Length: 215
Image 1 (cartoon, helix red, strand yellow):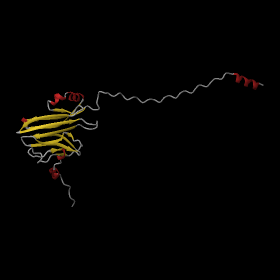
Image 2 (spheres, rainbow, N blue to C red):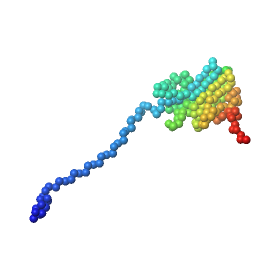
Image 3 (spheres, rainbow, N blue to C red):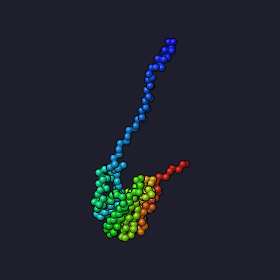
Image 4 (tube, rainbow, N blue to C red):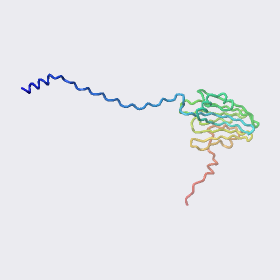
């Protein structure tokens, strides 16, 4: 009897529902990357080609140049005309640039054309090329800086009208210095100095120490 009464009381007691399961906490988010500065390029560096004619020193130079740092790069890009008048031709903008100079030194007339082309891709370099006519005849047609195929890097060209020679400072892809032949370096020689004519000096190979022979 007592058992029946306890069972009845338990059935009559109000049922307390169980607490619902708590939702799982969301995974922690990784810290957001700082917003990039849209006004700042990947690297503040820019190149240019410099043309100098110094009759009093008896030479004409065409060389590759570089500037680093925000202010110098911004100045180079925003003062193209002013710099070009001083013989500094910036690698800037999105279109082809051509600069012409004509000078008479040492009894010769030198007509120089410097062409600068922007890279087609971000990973490519600017294309810079110098063409020089001596008394109306093409004497030099080579890269300044990297050649298009990357096989040659030309630091600069120096023309010595009084001496009648042309020096080209360049290295190949292995870092070995390359030059035009002594005959081709003569202004009077009718050949044209190009990237392909720059080769290691054969005299350097002859002077290199030879391996010792075993007895």
